[in-house]
Image (tube, rainbow, N blue to C red; front, side, top):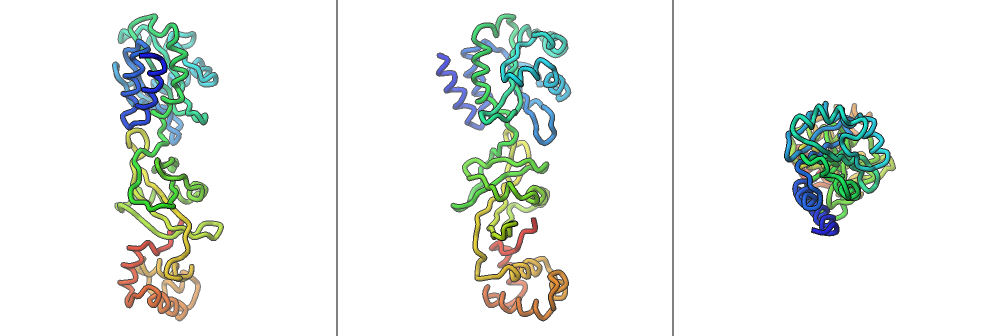
Length: 318
């Protein structure tokens, strides 16, 4: 296999869900590696953790942090250049974690996405002392931006289904870390709203499969919002939620105040409770309900609640 073919095949496999193992099979054809390990940097915790390994047992989290804290590795990060194991400053780590298992050489590449975000590192090891001499270091350095996608824990790996055209989205995990959603435009409005992470966490912790509603942003624009569950991170290992939105006008010629009343009716509040919450009279609440029943064609609070929940007519508190 030529170097150009190796580049193409590694990129092809990384784009697939089983990308890491396929990419390393391709890399093995041009670099005599016998084992590898991908270690991800988790932005939610600020720590490194092993994702997957082949050819030797995965190292534990403390060992991953130990290696990432070595001054030579920090220098390699600054230079964005692979680091050969047994280089000055790495000898002790090599003797403790690799040499007892028969490994005689190693090569590590810090992984940065093309836009510059650090995602982790990849270790290559071999029983041959000279395995990574020659072009191996340069080749791994050139492939590092592509391999960085493997350790990118910010990726959402499950596409949301059923979103009509015009929706933009952001995915969140329980820690509030945001992620792009493949195949769906990024939502600057959701990303800029600090309360969206808490709303997503509440949804993740609920038993709901989906949630919809209306959101009034800080600029006074209403948005139709749909929330769905999603697996995020490497191979969908983390529970998450997709928050999708598109600007909208209020349906059925409803007013903002009427949306507030509908939301509280759906929550089971009585007219006096709604009046107290909205700081209006009970008579005003009754008038609002009369208008709402007419606009939505409902004749009872039960039917109003059913319609509101089914069509996402309640306001989402963010």
